[in-house]
Picture 1: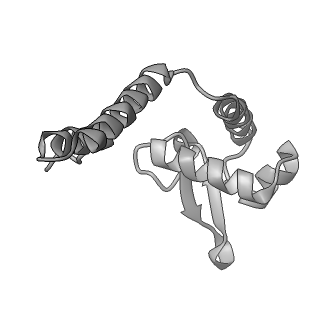
Picture 2: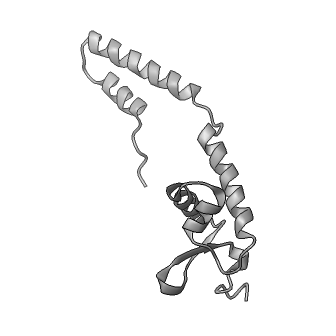
Length: 124
């Protein structure tokens, strides 16, 4: 798998090319800005990420009370969040394995905790 070229890599390649001094000065300044911006980035979660983590914990708690699974809309109304927010967070939780997604009656999508998934032979 090839490494994706970063802006800094591209600027370094451009600076090594035969360019006028004025262009090299501009590119060097741009490179310094990028390096400074990247250095100031933090690995701390954003405010929204913190809020979403709290909501995910509430979703997990809500799902502990069901063996049947619940619809996305049920999660949204129970927690007082939008359907879009519930759908996005449930999808993230499915990707990380925190929640499983099953098709219920009439092709309704249901979400439940992996340990409550009776269709999984390991839990039967």
